[in-house]
Image (cartoon, rainbow, N blue to C red; front, side, top):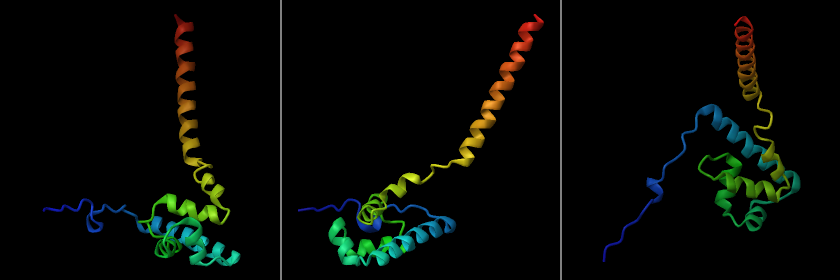
Length: 120
């Protein structure tokens, strides 16, 4: 009998997380840990309410990038903070600037097109 192990833990692909971004994850983990402490929620309680292992809860509190965003969301939900995730990227300043540049470019092109038609 031949057994084949597919996608063993050692073969899983890991996300490449640059130091600056790891800092954001670490900050998120710390914020979650502090929110738990403020509510006097233990890792065991969070684990029971989310169905996640205590090891996964510990990784979340450390900002571990190998934990899925769904697991982070489950913990945030227990803390009553899941709506905070919806605020991510809400204020897309760069996106609005790029959009404004394109709108100005389009308006300028249209204006030049109208002048060419008047000259005809």
